[in-house]
Length: 175
Image 1 (cartoon, rainbow, N blue to C red):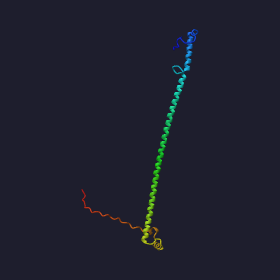
Image 2: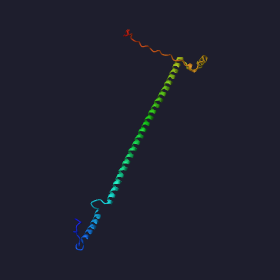
Image 3: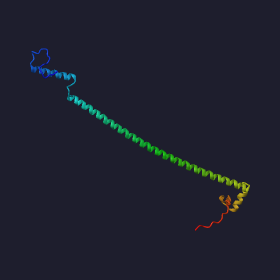
Image 4: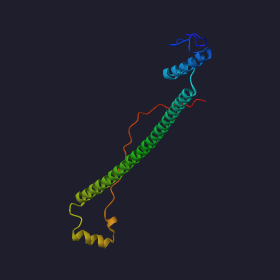
């Protein structure tokens, strides 16, 4: 329907002039446009609302990016902290193992020393066939003026047997 012409459907065409027809057509058109939601192009209010929606969407996207970055930074910090704690735990475990090995080694040395002393005392008891703490022996030790350490005779050193080797023929040195 063309609204720029004078052919407008009105109840009484004879009472209205051409200019009033155009005026009435403009009023009807504007009222129809406002009632139906606008003209062919967006109005200023619609543009403003669309711009506000776009700004809100952009702000939401920026907030999401910032939240993702913060979460990634937090995860990286937690991973670094976990790695540091793991390294500290490994160092502590190595130290504990080293201390345990050292304590076992010292205990083994002490046990060997006790066994040596015990075997030496048993050897001495067999050698003299009497208990070493009898008065008779004390008297002899006083007479000799020996200290308690000197009273225990040293064990004889064992000679290592030389293994027999087959005699080899003399080979002259190469020049």
